[in-house]
Length: 361
Image (cartoon, rainbow, N blue to C red):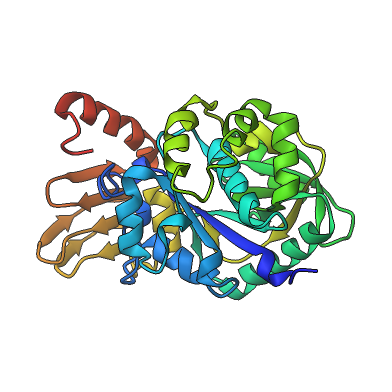
């Protein structure tokens, strides 16, 4: 019998653009490759190092758009070419997870797989690794698709929610997924006590996952499984380039998790944020006595409160009387935007693309 620990693998999803973090995040260098936290390491480096505490580097895969292959190598030089999966198109999370599972099945059919985004904050790593250990033990012994749920501490409308059955066990059966709710629903979910945020961190045996694809997303499975003999060979990328764009563009939640009947969650708390927006960075960052978050060495502010300020080291900012704003200076782009309207930034970047091509996007 193979060693259970040696069967644990991690797939880091790193193909997104992070458009809500514009202008820092651009198509040429998305947020996962940025030092958003100001700690001297990019988000993908922090994610990779976190998982090295659980598995050897040989058991970590990165799934990204193939235009970011060189960026992945730059940030994670210990990875081999075969550990970097290059998507030729952006087809959401279900096809990239199916591709990963089929590739992994080829060299370890007993693989127990963690799938996680590359750009999340996790402040309490010991608690995170403990939750993963419980999840891996469960999926090793059960035909289960498991997701880590985050115990909510506020009625946030920006996250999806998972309702679970409270059986008294650590691992809970999932009853229902709800996409981003309105405030009234989010408040009701928080009050009920049997909802968690959907963190998008999944744990499953590759065998269980591929069974679910065959049952609930057969078109994705049919297209990508035709390349079984190509995976982990010199022909893999050519097969993927030709066939991957034919897969339906759909999230793993819609394709599998909201349909299957063997879905479980572990309600968890480990200082998590999906870091999806500037506001989420503001929430997670240290603040001064006036509730400002200031990243920059030459900043002079007066009567300013609750702002997120991010300036280049060599630029001086003088500011007075602003409250609840995002001020981001990336050299060629300066954004000054109400924090309460930050959800509009994604649409603004589209307008910028249409007006100035891709020079600033």
